[in-house]
Length: 183
Image (cartoon, rainbow, N blue to C red; front, side, top):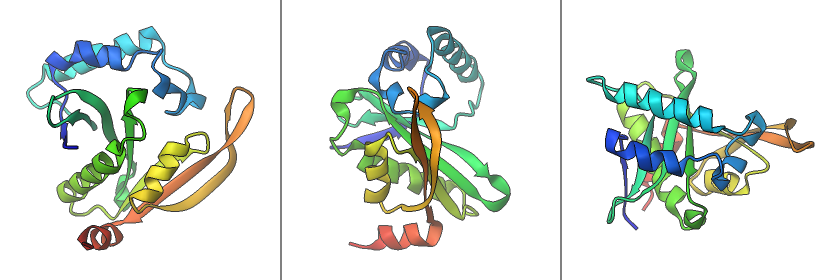
């Protein structure tokens, strides 16, 4: 499978809107303890993206994951600064359609994204990824691509009256480079 990562465009917004609809199953895994998105949240997000795209140099912290053969939008990868002073960036990934889960897309896309972040930020020291114990797929992906579980915050999340752990994974630049240099 060939994947590409690319910036969202104005032309993508109608399709993107349907892919992130509040009814999509991925929302039950993507931090649902923070609250489920509403149609109003979605509309606001699309309007903000449209406004940002009208600028000369839009500043997004995510890119779309697309099928390299047919261009279909599969998901997105993102980042945010956990602590810019210490050069600690957190990354994330979402695959929108349940039919794409378990097909190895994350195993290809997330390392591409990490490579890109490290290449664009020479001072970056570490990459982190935070998930929760209710997302077995994300825990498996983090481990599969070489991230180390560094913290488990027990019973830190509540969903449907049940407690879950918050899990932090990470890797240092030199560890990632050594991992990627292996044949």
